[in-house]
Image (cartoon, rainbow, N blue to C red; front, side):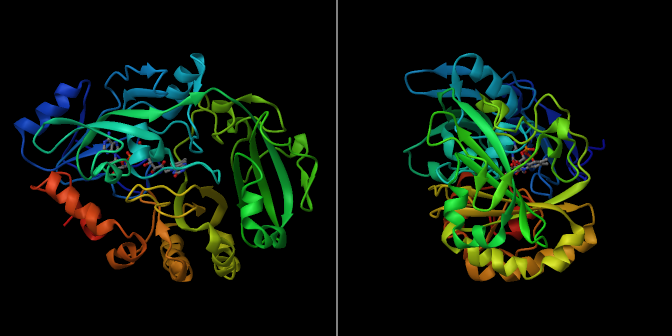
Length: 418
Ligand SMILES: Cc1cc2nc3c(=O)[nH]c(=O)nc-3n(C[C@H](O)[C@H](O)[C@H](O)COP(=O)(O)OP(=O)(O)OC[C@H]3O[C@@H](n4cnc5c(N)ncnc54)[C@H](O)[C@@H]3O)c2cc1C
């Protein structure tokens, strides 16, 4: 049976089979009645072979989500296979919200948290940082729930599928809020580099888009919570508000983007860049992303920008975002406020493969960490040097799964499993 490929077609799965579970019992059955390797598959939005296995893939996206709201604890507990956009709509109808969302609302909660998926905002942790508890089926079929505060918990939210199949997740929530999105064009590079933290703090969630070779930063998207701080004005640090007829971002269909132009709207319709009701085509692109400490961010940008002429011809766009520091062992923002430097490449695998090691070399002095779900060429040694808790995470995952059922070639290559 052909399992097919990742969303962008960047990896064709080699697994022997795919089980689309419709109940937690079915996941347990798989792990108790068979003894080969098993890996969880989410909505296939990663770009590499992280999810793959020589054995069986199992997806929990078909298990009923059955959301349970706990208003006193300010949490929602939900099936891990639900897509963020669907959960967001369910919460909003009841007056609740998530702290943040990634750019695309079509991605599963279980898969997104497993790789430390993030939005932006200097005070916003990655999506995994909102995980208050998770329930998983372990290597021998036992169901176990681990909650924030329990020993070893901080290894699990960004767990790369390395210790079990996560079936339910409890997420922190907060009262629903209103957001406006204002897009500024032509921010001088000097303004960004002189005060990177200030620029990236200019809203609840700020993203800067560049192709590196322009004189000014192409677009800065300021997503502000209405009623918090001052509303963005027309002039800002030498940039200007975009005109209505300018709306668009590189190759993206403007109709696919969430509403901009300072129009106030619900959080779930402003925090993602793409609309849930717009079906994204199969992506003709490759993505790469690295995390550096925000305090090193300006120097890291200068180092990458020295390669602008080589990068730009193969790039659709770079997006710069921020993440608040967290304590999740394998998070890109573990222990440090972070700048995320993202590249959406044209679908040119050979050129991307040639450029990524050069970018990694330029970012090595800053202890850059790769996004686990995107394309990179970092070695186990380089990843271990950037991720202080990697060795401890490996020990824990190996202990939870002594037969290596949830290990695969990707995790072994990077030293996440032995
Ligand atoms: C168009 C696009 C936009 C994106 N935007 C962002 C963004 O804004 N920010 C960002 O940080 N990333 C972004 N990404 C990357 C994406 O969020 C991550 O790759 C994410 O992990 C994909 O989730 P998924 O459900 O597709 O998981 P998959 O890609 O299917 O799997 C990823 C990993 O999660 C594990 N996994 C999946 N489900 C479970 C489960 N139930 N239990 C245990 N492990 C599980 C898998 O084993 C695998 O290791 C984007 C990707 C695309 C294609």
